[in-house]
View 1: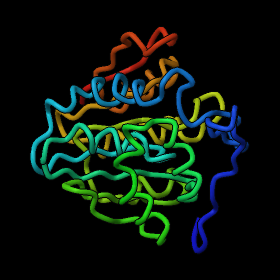
View 2: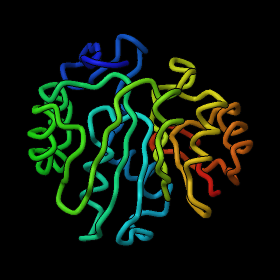
View 3: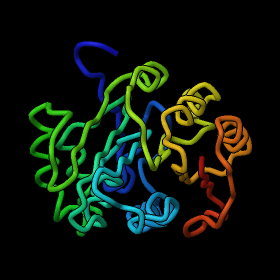
Length: 220
């Protein structure tokens, strides 16, 4: 994608939960999305205990910004870098509507929403330096010069959005991970675990959140 952003195409389940029409998948868990974010992406990467000044989090799938806000809430003044890759960005109004389901996140979302509404995709939130890279992840991740210490792999379901979870994209995740770096994801799909193993990670399946029996985490 170049030029004008092609945004998210949404339905709203129960007027609260945004669902992508493109992928027929909700943006967050029906069973407390903020708690799932903390279980999967933060605890799955042993965070916030590993946070240090200069620590770099990267993410596939920015969505509502909920993972970013959970990271902001968990950080204790450390200077963090946060890079997210998003193909179909939401509008600021839709993000605000979605985040209203989580009062704790919504309470700190104002600066994010203000920046987002201006079209800014690189900005500072407290001590977190944020960059959201818009476009097809199969291109944008390969071109990214950075390296992450922790990855949140939060694309839509591999069954609904297989391009996001392709062996080629997972190989790029591995290539853009520092030695000793980690990933965590809600999915336990066997082909995703195989691709991440091939990308250089030691992969393990662990207990998921709520009614989800399993999730996946790993270390390079």
